[in-house]
Image (cartoon, rainbow, N blue to C red):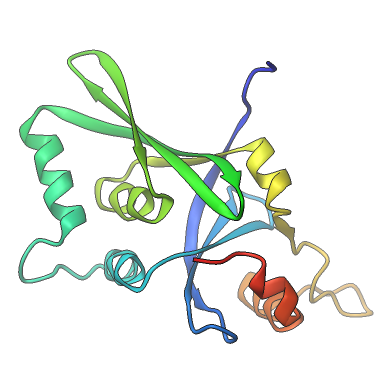
Length: 173
């Protein structure tokens, strides 16, 4: 089996799928206009959005509890890896360091991403997952005839608006 190639990603933000009203977390390849949308649940979207907006809930949410538990156990979340995509379902792994050893823990990508945001851990996606999911390269989307490019948000919006219902329906929760 060939060695895995991990691609570092950033959490770009959240969108709503207009055909199903489902939240989508949008990951972006660091320093490139390649995006990976992942349909997630409402609770996880709320947890991600709160962190992106710098809000702190009055009582700890589940992801806060897990972050505090890791700290209490002298463990650190090193990274999150979205490692596979099967039957339109993404799979992730938490890479946790405790006492000099790395422990890998299976997780849903939405929970893993919410936790990574809370503790500042790196996010990676296996290259084969980007290929399977047909990650979207918007580097040419939104370029005018004169060659001027819109900003990233405008180009992402144009790409999203251009999707058909069939495109939106290929990832289900």
